[in-house]
Image (cartoon, rainbow, N blue to C red; front, top):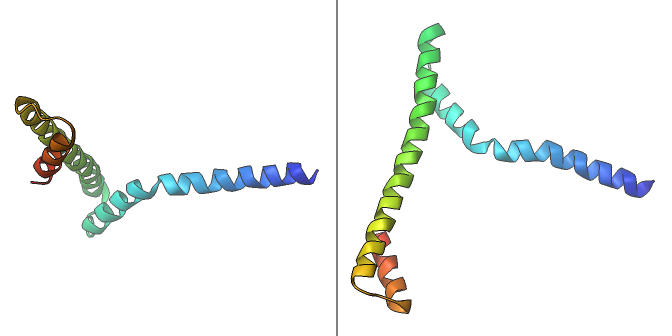
Length: 98
């Protein structure tokens, strides 16, 4: 019986903590957009919030795309130079940083 109560308590704890941990970035976006929306009301606020939240997603996507493009470029350069092993690793590190 004690074992069952411990399992139930653990499951309950996990169910309450997991959503809080996952909501962090969305909450941060919402806080930032709310701070910018001061003074706006009604449809104007609704339109602004929609734009603001979608713009944040677009910025994140563009940052990922830029990093992906950089990775593709560095990979192509390493392949053209026929680099392998430690030389390739060192080249890729410096290429991605600079």
